[in-house]
Amino acid sequence: MSTDAARLSEYLSAAVEAARVGAAELERWRGKFSIREKGRADLVTEADEASQKLIKHVLLGRFPDHIFIGEEESVGKSPGDVRPAPDAPPAWVVDPLDGTANYAHDVPAYCVSIGLWHAGRAIVGVILDPRQNELFSAAVGQGAFLNGSPIRVSTVPDVASGMISTGFPANYEKQLRNLETWKRLTAHAQSLRRNGSTALSMAYVAAGRFDGYWAYDNYPWDVMAGAALITEAGGTLCSTDGTAFDPYRPDLIAGNPPVRAELLKLLLAADPGATG
Image 1: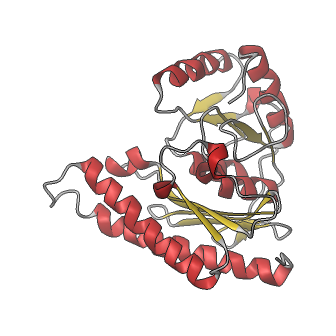
Image 2 (image 1 turned 180 degrees about the horizontal axis):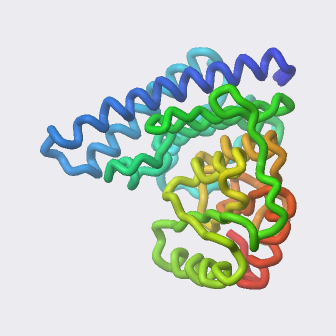
Image 3 (image 1 turned 135 degrees about the horizontal axis):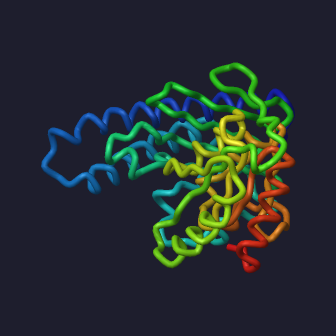
């Protein structure tokens, strides 16, 4: 399957269209929280599913031979379970609502995340934040953008000067593990953040707002688009044990090059068993 510039532009255009459609559906459902008797959790599930259905329709309508991997149809699977075969056609990896708890509580920090995986790498990434009207987009070799303007990772030289973000999993034992890492990093970083959306955190790294990000418990749909954005914005990613970044593993470190390298050293010192 060709991934030349023209084809990549086609893929990117489709991802932007799908993200806008999915985000509009989320906003339509958001208005129902105050007028429906069902619980918020039920409404969020319906909003997720409705958004994903529309996104899938757009993407597979444009590229019917592609694979679609969506969060809502992958519940209960491990990250590695959804990895396409090496010779598989391009795979759209989609989170129709990243930042679910924020969305349910009307906290304006959630997004639609759409990444395209092919030949062993993320080649397109689109993250749309409907509340802030921010569209982050990237295609391999074409740069990373925010609402059409180029973005780059920060030039902060070290963790001590940086704002670092993380994510906490739903699993209690894994939360405790990351809390220990968090406590240790408070002695090194200028500031630590947890905004409740992996995709937005990674988009913020690409845009130079956050200087680094680490996590132990992500899924491919959380990180695929962000990986494309960070790479095209001049950043780097790896797994928490220092091996090459793999979106089908749950753990990662991302950031501008010096911050990412220092974060790896700090995480290994804080948690020598720091793998997913």
